[in-house]
Image (cartoon, rainbow, N blue to C red; front, side):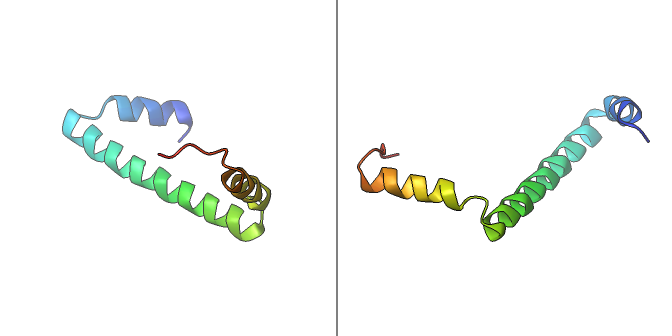
Length: 65
């Protein structure tokens, strides 16, 4: 199945199935994002960004939430 076929199939879903699919897809994407972030952390790809954030915090250049 290609993307166009998938899009057409999703567009034909009745509202209740579309809601169920949407919820599943959001959870699927969240898990994918979590896996990607974990991989980036473990590989050290975020070390420099973390260091810059720590330095900005220490220097008082952060705004409280």
